[in-house]
Length: 286
Image (cartoon, rainbow, N blue to C red; front, side, top):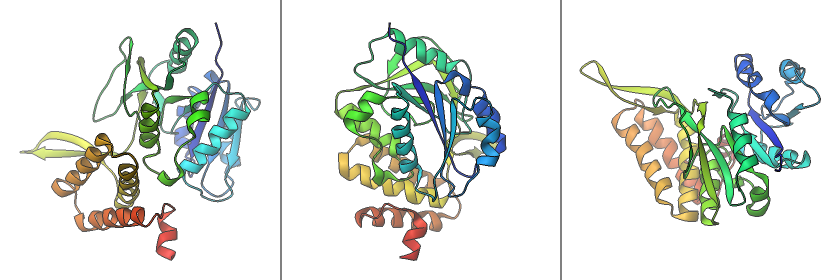
């Protein structure tokens, strides 16, 4: 039986000490881990608390400038390969596992035939959509990036995240790509990630909460719709299209400051058409 090597990649931006206890809960279960800081300045003094837990297995890497989430994680994939990773675990710093998810993952990848598996995913537990651990596995289509194991061999074959997604939709695009190439995305139902993808917005009727949904700020909507349009033109994927419709509908029905949201959506789609995929600040300066 092969013992697979798991290397962690934790993308950071303006590292927050309140996230450190989350990281410390699982970091020792990894064979190696990179803390990738895309703030654009050296925060090694702040992250020393984590590195000092096991300096032989934990490495802080600082980008000299902000290069975007996609490029930063892609660099993490390259670094993981240099450490002979068989699988790469991506974790947002605010994510926490409810249980020994990495041990659950190891048991699965060490005992099952994963030659046609590109991603192993947890169950995502959100405050607006509670989930608990169960048994077994199932095929899923589009898990979020955080908490997932990526098969290094498949990454090498199909390429890493699409640089044009820059900040948002990188996991969605990659999931579409692996499925189109005949690979599976497997959810280990026993592994549960406490996930925080966006602020929870409560829709109330007669004083009672009737719906909970995610709410991002207008600038994030710029990136979401820019990537959404790009992915739509690349694949004409129904789920990606419907997800954009869902996000637009939330603005129409529930959110305040609709004009600002609509402005950012228009700019995002316009920039995708013009093939601008960088930082929005660079757009404003050009």
